Amino acid sequence: MSSPCNPVLSRVLQSRDCLMASGLYLSDSQTPANLRWVPEGCGHVLSRIAVPAVSGTATPTDEDEGPAPDRPANSLPASPPERAVLSAIVRIDREDFWLVSDGGYQGPGNVWKDILDVKLSCALTKPGLEPIDSDFAVVLNALQLLTQKCVTPGYTLGKSLFGNENSNPTRFKLRHKLLESLDTGVDSDDVGPPAATDPFSFELWPLTKQRNRAELLALKSSHRILPLPAYDLADNLIHPFAYRRLLQGAVVEIHFTLSHWGIAGVRRDVYGGDIELIRLLDAPIASTCAGIKRRLPLHLKADSVPSKKQATE
Image 1 (cartoon, helix red, strand yellow):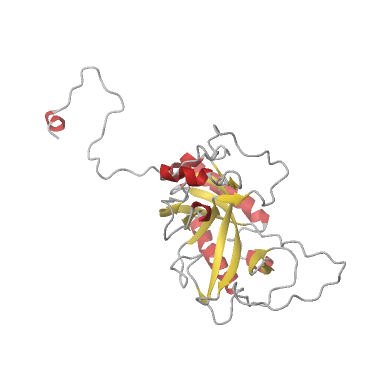
Image 2 (spheres, one colour):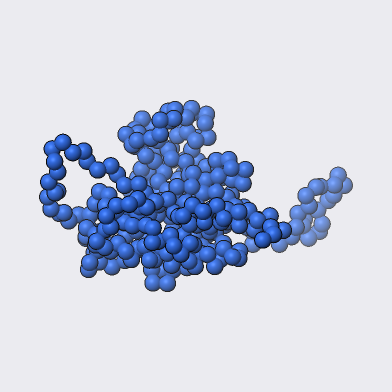
């Protein structure tokens, strides 16, 4: 098959071929059969490893699970399950977009009780390119199938992965945690906190409201900032001040994990998707301002003067 002349489509199709070979591309109808939910803590995570299948029921987070089964004294606790990193090619929705540096945090309130709770998020829709648009329908079907494999008897599906579109979704939502405790395990190549002059530092991290800087700095000794793992067309990590400009409305290759938990108080199942990697495939088209009714020159001539209409506006 010859390469398409459209460079964007060529890049997207190349990405699609690589993802297909990975075995975790959700538009491959065989992918869900290779995945299963495994217990982790009070919930479940989606995994690709060969472990006994979950029975299809889940335990609410605030109900007693009963005593743990007996374990030989010399046995070690089971290691945490390896999460399956799923992938898809999508367009990041322009409207439901909160992948800004602090998730749009305004301060303690109804959305977040404090900055430590902040999670960046976005909705993902079909890319607007064929054959990837057809792939996206398979992605949504696969996600519905996977969530139906891990349910709590007597519970309803809460607002989570598909937002308010649980029955007939046209998009799905993912998130990214902003802050992580220093006690959390990290790779051995971690070299400590960035310098105060680093754009990824606590001191320079962009905030929606500068009044929240003190709240962020108070966490410097106990937490680390987790930059969004998003990369531009040159495969460079995107700086936090450019998240909106480069990602809002963009076509991307996205990798993520899925988890499940039950909320006993309202008897609902909740499914969450956490972003592992975003790779830009097509930069978004800059939105225009509706209030601008005339075109401005890119270069001003020395003898230019405002027209009568311009002078009286």
